[in-house]
Image 1: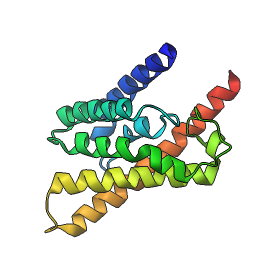
Image 2: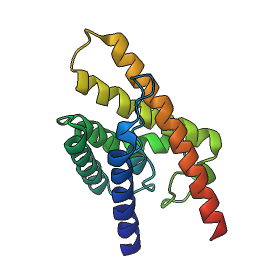
Image 3: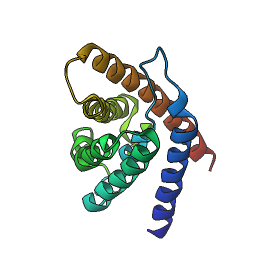
Image 4: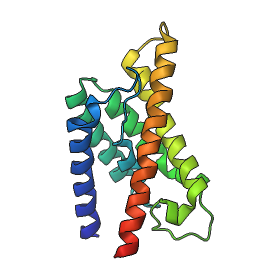
Length: 171
């Protein structure tokens, strides 16, 4: 149990540093920004304490808000995602799967994992950019930013999970 907390803290710090130092400076076509820190909430194991998950989401969101100058948008979006993540994960699981299963391509399968992460990333990005713009006056820009960021983030998540799978296979 303690090892799991240290893994979460290490991943929290790693994703926060990568997002702040590298990914925040990438804007493809002026609209698509990878928001990789959403991956942190997506990979929490089944039956993880919902209170702890919401606290992790809020803490990471607050940290990202500090560095991205998005007052409350990331914290609210990640807190919402952390709250609904267990239900979204249950949509893609069978009853036979272990209670302490962590979502990945290996545990869910390639297509269900893709659908799960796409659903989580879409929820996060839509709420995040809606809160950031706080209006529907420029809905085309909001839609471009949401869809571009969803696609770019999803590509990175699938690549990272593939690398994670290869690393676990070597160990």
